Image (tube, rainbow, N blue to C red; front, side, top):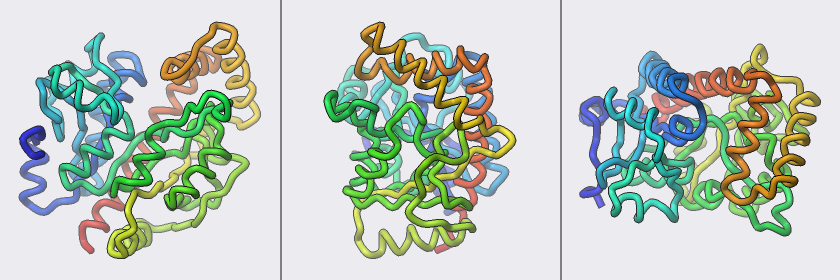
Length: 303
């Protein structure tokens, strides 16, 4: 298994020194934001993790290897590549074997992090059950991964383009704990609240680390969601964002957009309809997640 992994110098040295490591996905770089904001955001996220005492490990697939940590050049290559493949669990063997550039989704980043022995992963928002999934069966592979892979995911909840109620039901069925970090509500990515609550509220990084250690010491398979709401000053009005998402969903339906094309279409449309404010919110929440994730990783590393 290790033959497929390569580690950046920083990650290798961090592991040797026994430091806390935080995994980062790469789809947000290749498919989530335009260049150069994507690379600037990725560098800033890595820096925030360093400032909070941990080592960042951005994960991607290049030259037939799973890269655990990217160099400046590799980050630039990923950020400017026009043909990086969005790589979920089903795509991983193909992308490694074909030596394509692969940007890892939440699910694949979790798989690669676990292979590398990393327990903490920071992202923007998780995928979930899509609206209308009762007929389309469109459910993100992220949820199944959370049920089976021992990596904790710090995120700003699930994007409000999804069916949040059904997403939480699915996670409950799979036994995935959903922790509200300093909040009772389950955040909905662009907004700090939603109509739903988290399962538990924990207010300190050490409390989260203790819970994760107990979970895995009990042999309970799977990850956990640490739902960290977008900072209030960057949170968008709930009614406003719901109205915009309804418009975007209607347009997607009218244009016959289905499957994996739905999310990028909706996010692009939301960005357009909010006049770029959604992109600013997206960046702000990722920075906030990086800070919280690094602090939890440091506490988990002490246990």
